[in-house]
Image: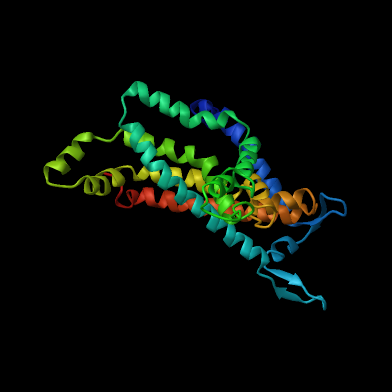
Length: 297
């Protein structure tokens, strides 16, 4: 008893945080895990009957003879989600790195202004921002109207309801998550290293590639994870910009809990997304334990 009191006294500072994490994160995850192994209710919800049908449905379906046959439909949705999330990460990195590098090279008072501009989109509801992209990408939208007015095209391009439109919406939504970590890494960069590289006859691109990029790699990896995780489970951009024709895992989970009313299958899909996220985090942690894979100096 005395040992327990001493332990609680020594760790009293972390008890509130541990309580919040346990109630609002661990308990919901356990509920989702339990639901994924139950049978679906007749009108939604679950029945207290153990079943693995939700996980079985991820790869197999019953044919007309009630025999299990391999069905790659949900596997295709998974690969599509991984692909679009990867494209979103790549696009955010291509745009976000130069922006972060430019901001880090500005005087301190100007940095604050630019960082404010980066965060301004978060002041507007995500649903409204996504709807705005519909006005830009539709057949009579801003892009097609401008191209047709300039005589570049004769008929509208199919920009909306495509995987490219979904990726563009995700890039626009999550690019601040890429810029801010990279900026935090570049802000601590010792500029004397770049000067030393230039003194050793390195070109600007050489100094950027061999000095700036490796030293900013922790920010790049952190930003990539911060973009990849929400992009993998996004459902607003796929629904609005994909038109429901290019389902992603997040859209599929939302569909199971709303229209389909198959809570166990929705829970199983949520667990699959969580497993992918945990895999990414484990790879990142493994890289850090190895000294950042050569990126920590």
